[in-house]
Length: 394
Ligand code: F0G
Image 1 (cartoon, helix red, strand yellow):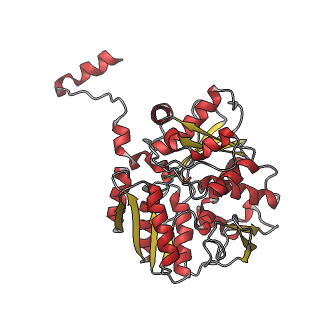
Image 2: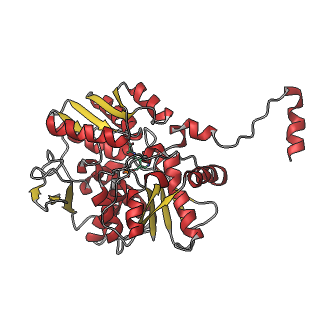
């Protein structure tokens, strides 16, 4: 596919070289600008999941490392026929990260790297560990100590990665990975500042467009701010080749205690003020210095979208409502998308007749502690009286 790389900080342009991850001139974020083939049509595609869209994914891959990620259910709400949940928890390691990881790890293998590294609030770690194992690469994961949900930590242990825990938030872990990548040139970084990873994540847009066309709104939980941009990029590229004629509004949702992008949008500012001690129950998005903030702002502005914040209470309520009214189990960060939807509806900033897709980024099982905080119907019972309990309950 034709295209080039462009730095978001110094505007330098480079050829579409897969070994470029950050700007070689200033270290800034690189955008992959591609011009998809004009004769592209969903009708000609074969296979399922991320690699179904191979002709729209930049880069060349000598070997594809895959666990059949993508092709996740788009579930229509029980309560509103215009609301949909894109259930990314159905990916092989239980989050949308697998879409990016198949591309990033395939890239690392293509470039002959032997060691991969990622900072993570948990999901990137689990995904990186799984795909690195599948590729036979050595992996190191840098985690904020004591702040990673149990399911994600357990996955990282199971897949056999080396876990490096730092005292401090994800942002401390992130800057140490950035330093490792820049100084120790032998490690391939799997974080979302790596634009090749986002090429996989943009397939969320392709799946939605292929299944239901273009919604009015896409609501995405925002942490390091790569995914909202990746989904926007997917829609933009389809629009460029005339497969769709408009793009959805991109709406980001952050947790109140970690909301630099939402606050910037509220204030009408172009640059977020970073948060030094981010805090939220939604540990996946407990991030104060989103590395991709420039990309997220671009996606939000270009699509005439917005970003809002929701409280921890709103997040946990939304998680329960999703589970108990819709039968959909999402982790707290993902439920933030639904909390944002409910908030926008209640403030009349979004209409229930608008076609809206919420991206439920990770599975409820990722965070068992959050689930057991919900008020439970749990009764210690003498087996002889079980019938009486049910009859008295009806
Ligand atoms: N939802 C979940 C479940 C996540 O794990 C993340 C990010 C996000 C939303 C936000 O996506 O960073 O692209 O804005 N998790 C990263 C991790 C940071 O390390 O697993 P984003």
